[in-house]
Image 1 (cartoon, helix red, strand yellow):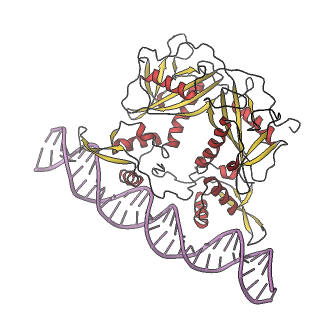
Image 2 (cartoon, rainbow over the protein chains, first blue to last red; image 1 turned 120 degrees about the vertical axis):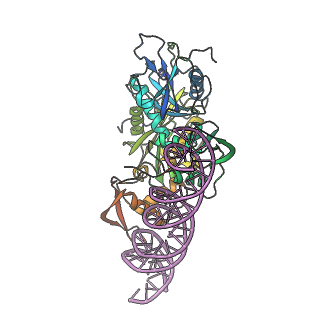
Image 3 (cartoon, chains in turn blue, green, yellow, orange; image 1 turned 180 degrees about the horizontal axis):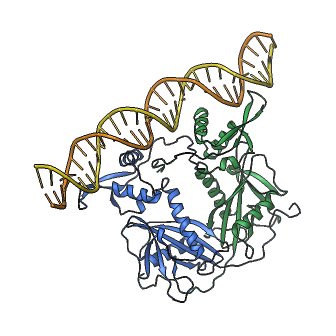
Length: 230
Length: 230
DNA sequence: GACTTTAGTAGCGCTCTGCTACTAATTGTG
DNA sequence: CACAATTAGTAGCAGAGCGCTACTAAAGTC
């Protein structure tokens, strides 16, 4: 090991193929759903795929991700952020050497382009192993980050009831939350403000609609949590 | 938009160059330091660089990252995880189209290979813009994840004092923590166990040495935190 | 009107957390 | 040796946070 210079020599120019994959997630029928495309060619090895494309010349990956998402969705997703880059032996539908994965969040109730289908993440069809791993990473990434960034609000229309918001958290975290505690914590976090609209959803008392309106919190600097789940 | 098929046509094979960059971080002299290499060639545009190399044929990026880290460090870092992939217009020393960045953690007091220097992250020299952004992402990633994964312990030798551990957190979070509260939270998290060794560090009472020994925590399922800092 | 269903709140008790204030053990200094 | 200085480590209080039960409110259903 010590006989090798730590500085890389001027690299020989190696080229490879790179794809951008987009995982679009939305809440749907009580679970999270991912947007899959039906393969245009019935002979294709993978009948279903994540929206993807190879990276175009001079195109930044996040630009490509937005382009691919628009193509599959018809509109731009409410949020789009990089997840992970895979380059292992697992198969990608385009046999790309590298695939850069993006997570896009889509508000509940949105529709998709023709040929695209929302599929519950716990009922996925057979799909190329690398794209399967990408979806798992997306769901896990959403779970990890939902407390730290306003992702839940990107999964809802601009106005929503607090019960709907709580359902998003329950869906993403896959556990029940206590109503009063949830609302108290939400109140303390100064994240939403009430509108003067109410919505009656069939049975039961109508619910007030809220919108995402974060205010700067004073202080905030808390001690270390050690939220490490070993 | 709607006239474009959501399914990508069979992609023309586009190739590009990809690099793997490694940000090795260690605590050093009261701040975090990153390992930089001096350019072998004085005429090079960048006098200093992050350890990097282009991705070899059939080599998975995490394998390349481990290889590059070993070359720069002489040993394997205590942890190595993917950070982000850049592909924008910012310059990379190898002019790579894509660069996959990895974060490596190195225990306090480790030495580097010849030609490699530990530089405090708040006193960086001029460096290619993409690698500068990579370092920023590494420091920020460490800050974001230190509560959720045992990264702090990878920045220390196997046996350490609780004051040393607290210093790591203070360094990474760049704020002071309260001693009693820190220890109480650490105790509750069942993350460390005492050894029967003590260390006298010049002045003051000797400190007991601890080791990282996480135990499974019961329960753990807490409510939503809304730790969103707006 | 009684019952069901969903929204929303009050408040109790326990836990968690920030803090002050202590004790403990060592080195340095006259 | 006495005593200050320095670092390690703990006790315990007060207030904030959190889980929970139990309630009230407003709608539809029969």
